[in-house]
Length: 114
Picture 1 (cartoon, rainbow, N blue to C red):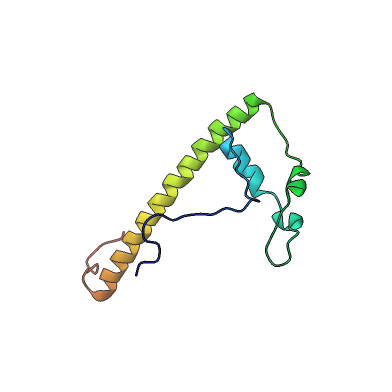
Picture 2: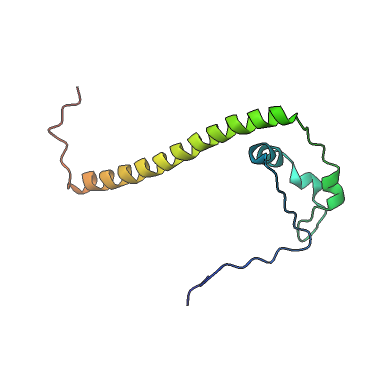
């Protein structure tokens, strides 16, 4: 029996918020920095009310500043993503080569490292 055969279905509650913005990177940074624990009013299940969210002050730069931020940050995040993918590949390569070295499949005794 497969655990999630087919499509994964989500049933968000009526407290789910959907935020859409063309300023994805800026919004992401703002949302990351909010201390959500400070707004939690639930005892058993975490709950943040709309009233609490509406009291959070968010600095709003001008559209020109937001556009510049989006351009710079999206370029940086793209590079971070590429670097992380490269790290994953290099880690796999290292692990494969190390296993072969330890098992004796690869002999490096004649390599001059000078």
